[in-house]
Amino acid sequence: MLAKNNDLIRNTVHRHEPPVTAQPIQILVENDEVVVVDKPSSLPVHPCGRFRHNTVIFILGKEHNLKELHTIHRLDRMTSGVLMFAKTAEVSKRIDEQVRQRQLEKEYVCRVVGKFPEDEVVCEEPVLVVSYKVGVCRVDPKGKSCKTIFQRLSYNGETSVVRCLPYTGRTHQIRVHLQYLGYPIVNDPIYNMKAWGPERGKGGKIDKTDDELLEALVEEHRSKQSLDVLDISEEDWDPSTDNRECGNSGDYRESVDPVNGNSCPAEDAKDPARGEIPAVEEEGVEEKDPLCLECQITRQDPSPRELVMYLHALRYKGAGFEYCSKMPPWAMEDWQE
Image (tube, rainbow, N blue to C red; front, side):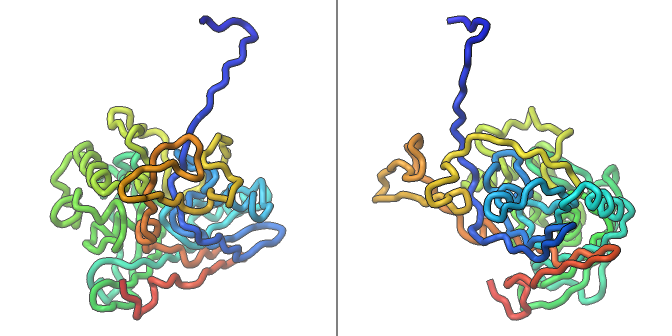
């Protein structure tokens, strides 16, 4: 049957968003100019990729009636901590100018593998984006210049808590620099993986081409059934269509254009958009997902460790303002895995 003028074509999309942590978004500051929150790990800042409801922008609008916010900077989906929004375009432009002039002081904390050096460490290796689709970068002479200063805060015999001061805002800058130094973040789902080789990318030594590296990373997560961590699904992964023009992660300013889409499960019933989809298991027999009338498959909940990365934006300071969050539990000196 051919479509004719005035015919209405309707398409229903069946979509499941990847699960996120149920930790609430804590509002640190709200006034006439800004809203500052402590972002939980695993939540993207705004709708992108497979995320619609499970985003900071959507949740602030739904649960706190905070709408039409202007993003000043972003945090990677797996990074937690201080996140600022402007309430007006004028405030956004003013703070954005500080960002562009590098007048914004940023302080992060993370927990890394091994005993980090006691003295201050400065890393100025350039960072190159390998793939925007998967969200992977590496140190490369052809990359963009950047600088990060590191200082060890504590060591518990196995891992170190490190203070990070990024002087630039390149994509994954802190994570890539730590990997290069040989102290990757303990549970970094990209830069602390076997796919990088026996030394996991220390010193920029990678025994693979970029395409081979991407394939190895995807295969490693596929074997663990954790492709959601890379923000891709099985059907999405096609290295031949990797779009290197459109980024999806990083700590930089980006305008927000929320996308309205049909998401399943719906945002009603027990508000599953904020929580994980419960698995339904009965001696190996698959049953319908109780939150979705379309699905015939069960889903396994990720562990808390899979939803949290030990990297936290602790403090943002600019002309006339300073916003801080509490130290995360994993950054305490006596913390054990």
